[in-house]
Length: 166
Image (cartoon, rainbow, N blue to C red; front, side):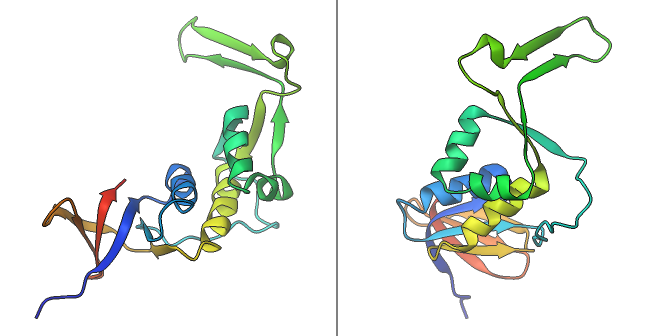
């Protein structure tokens, strides 16, 4: 007996910031998207301690998040604008400085806890009817099948196929 295979236009393996943003952007053009991630997602809560993992989101990323209707959610949680940044290499004299006063912008971007960013993105993905999520299941195998389709097998036995796998 052959196990059933669920067909998708695109499958995205990894529900980090890049995978979530890609899913939302591609959902505007494709009708069937699978999003696979080995970790179950635990959303950020307002009473959570501040996260130690943060990202410096630049203005281009803020623009993308705004276009995807996610940025207002990030701001409603926790985000701190930054106007300057000093970057250096450990045990080296190599360094570079950035300052919004050298630009026509009031800020360079925002510092955002990774968990806050992922929660806002995950909420938006969850609103998309054409994105099917497979959280908590790891990719077990990826193989080419007839034509240009790829077969994706997850550790729980679920089988997916897609023309494009990211």
